[in-house]
Structures are given as C-alpha cells and as structure tokens.
Length: 54
Image (cartoon, rainbow, N blue to C red; front, side):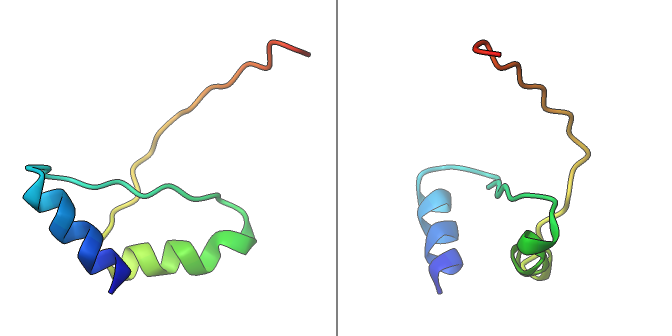
C-alpha cells in the first residue's frame, strides 16, 4: 500500500518515472525482490564517490 500511495502521489505531481535505490549485498535481497516484483527494472549504473577526508 505504501508503494501504491507513492506511485499515486508521483503521478499526481506529473512525474513519469520513479526510482528506488538499495544496496547490492545479501541483506538487501528482500528489497530488490520487492522492487522487481513491482515492475522496477535494474539499470546498470556507475556511481563514483571520493572521500575528501581520506
């Protein structure tokens, strides 16, 4: 129900797409399974981070 409400609000705001982000480790498997069951498609994305305090 929470996702359905989010979809409704996004559509009402004029959005045409929503994104969900989660980790790749095993602890996030249930979240990935849920998103895929909801019709989300995993995109190959490269994200780069630099720790400026290192």
